[in-house]
Image (tube, rainbow, N blue to C red; front, side):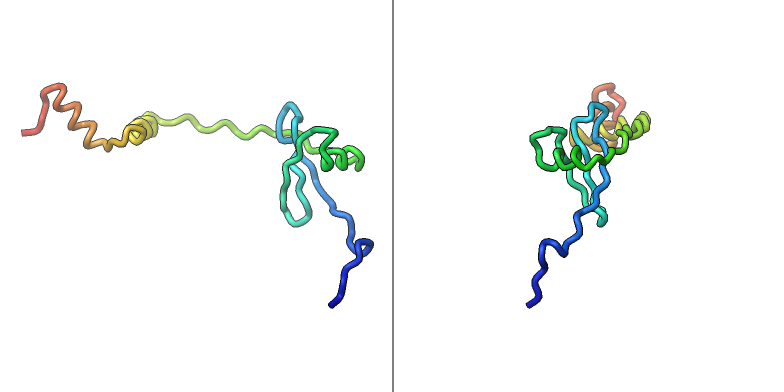
Length: 102
């Protein structure tokens, strides 16, 4: 069985990106695309490694604002929150207003 010596393993190469505008943490990504989140705390081993490496983190990029809900989407969400269908709501409104189907 072959063994790998520590000296045979190349040091990991990471890219860094701030995870907030306050720079309270980093996303560290390796060459395989695996990410880890690192708090910006000098007592944290991974953050201390980042500082010692002289690497620069990419600036934080805020996610785009979500598109506003349409009236239809709002109605559907509210009905869903109460476990109702449109037909059930229309039937309830018809009873309240006295406009039931005959």
